[in-house]
Length: 253
Image (cartoon, rainbow, N blue to C red; front, side, top):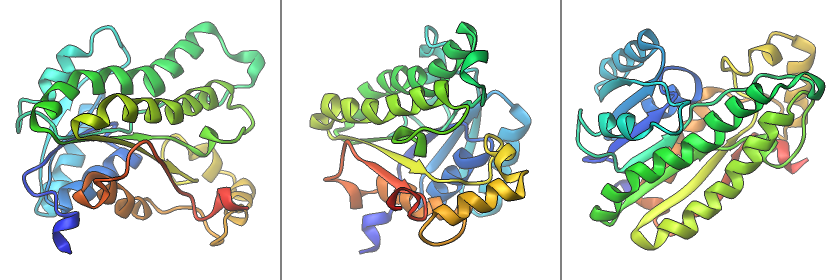
């Protein structure tokens, strides 16, 4: 049974891997045996993530990159293959949430949000898919959101991007699963990250979000580990095009 969740010999690339959800997933995949490449803009954060993985006995490397330019992702994609070979697993965890009222969103704000949250996951995955196809095995794991299914205040652009991630995941599955590449998404509830800092900074709002769950608390980053390993591992070979909500039952109520 252990082999179902064993990632030994696999290479995983994690965008946004220097902090928050991306870093936590990188730690989880490394703990399951994968060699992990973390990529993001902030080199210091990437170095910290690599150090934590290595301190826990894992293998990791950092590839600094600005993934917002969707017209120039071939170079970062090539760089991701240098440390350990072409990635078998891509986790699209990089994201932005500007939390603006609808009246304050500028075209530049909209373009940035849709680029990082929706366009980059597609174009980066497309650049890495040929190597996965050659192996006959691969994984793309997108990060969706509660806002993939429902609206929240000050979330027009972010919600549009995450609703798009849900459909992108299904479309990726349709396009690539026949080549052995499973494409799924994790939709987290409220977890303490840089993006959700405004929520957790307000005790009243944080408590209200916790009360909305079925289990009565907000997420802890380690709650994401099992889902990430499952969707990356052979255990999920016959699962593709799905959103897995890791939200303590928030969407069940």
